[in-house]
Length: 257
Image (cartoon, rainbow, N blue to C red; front, side):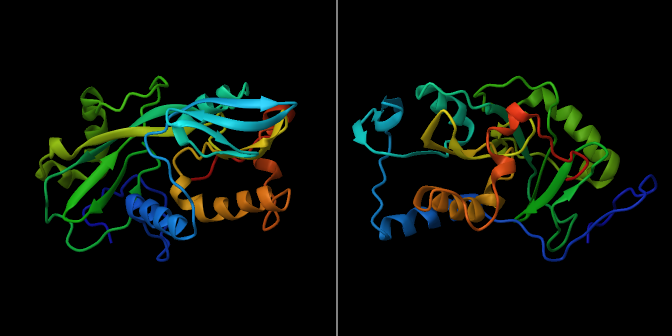
């Protein structure tokens, strides 16, 4: 499945043949096209500048394109979710953290497809993207912020971790023009924040997925729609993921992937 991997120091590994990966851009464009067919109006280049409330209810969202009257706001702003919440006077602990993706030149060292492979010892991950390889490693001391410049100084650490598990990476070259960086939306417990905000019930959070948002998007859309239309999520319980957990001290199992 993944040739030429150093396994001498491994106790075991997991593999699920039903796992896969998707193209997030195509998924997002598919959702957008369907929404438009259903009558949704999409305002582009309309940065949110304020959220107006009266008597504890939202009455409008102020944007660069003008004011939009509304009764409910769904905060699905990803890395900007904490900043959007602040516009409504709310504290939602979601911060942006840079993640780097390093891309190789096309290579034949791994013929055919390969699964997303994660070395849990180091955190290094790698998979194929067409004929190239993409890889990365989270930087533990990365400061929060909207920095999306590729961290070239971090590359040596990434490659050291990669070479230790996949020595044949030394046979490929980097495609610097294809490397990129973006922001994860990170919460204190790396779990999403879903549902109504207790201080402003018409403000509904759907953010903070900490790198898993594309996988959780369909289920999230379902339960957030229920939260709006039915008053609360119905298909499965989201209470453990509501923001109130930070007040009660609820914790999640951390020794999982």
